[in-house]
Length: 136
Image (cartoon, rainbow, N blue to C red; front, side, top):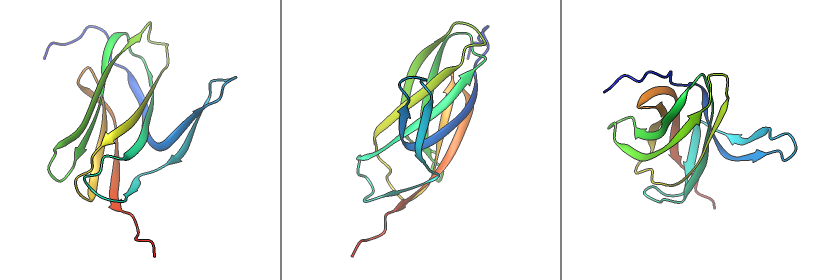
């Protein structure tokens, strides 16, 4: 891998939540129902939705940012998303917000959500995925 001249960003996060509200006037973020355990109705279903949020700073130039979700028991990648962000200067704070949809969790267990900048890890969050309680 070729070494890049520009610095990669530092991340605050990621935080995993059900949804996000951006206040219209101030543009402040409100994270709704942040979690480290996600309960799903059935496995192999792709109707699980959540949001990954991170604040990035100290980056410079065009930097590909990637979210990778892996099963920790097999290190299998179950979800991958990449997008290039432009950092005008190192003082710029960039909000990374990704609405994850169509992510299929194959089995109960612990999964790691990794945020990479130019293929370099900058942050991670582990979540436990469990079956939801049966309702009677």
